[in-house]
Length: 166
Image (tube, rainbow, N blue to C red; front, side, top):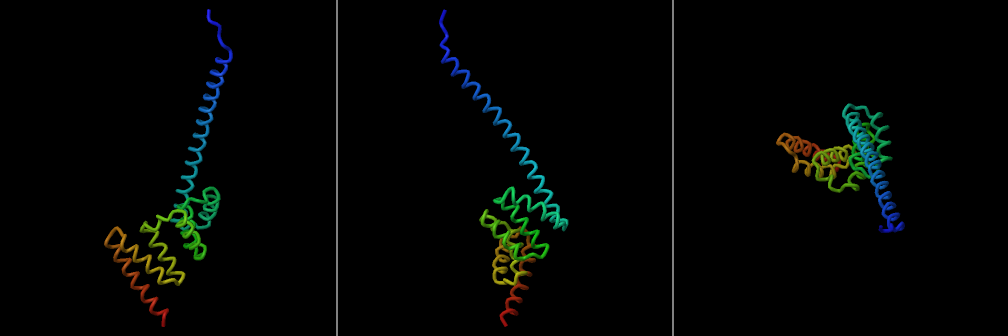
């Protein structure tokens, strides 16, 4: 009969126990992360609904919570900018929109961003900047109707620029 080496068996069982504990911990952490992600996306969806319905105070409360939890999420920063814009807090709106662009520079490739940022710049009286973003939007607009609407807005902005220089 072969004598068992206690130290080899001990290391084997300890290693097996450590692996089992790690697997269990990973499962628990994954379940918690999944739950947190689900809650987060539910909040983002509720936020979008608040903004679309004009419920800006409720949106601001939820946005403030989300920004604290996810300060690097450009979508939340963007929604904060839109919410501030719609409640006529233009300087704050611009700050959040710029933060969103810093976090995700590719946001400027999205047509909706271009249009909303152009509108904000026009409302701030920065007509030249607004015109640049509006022209970019016009180039990316998906339909002829949107391109025409952008062209009409560009004409209005150009008139405002002319009027402000005289």
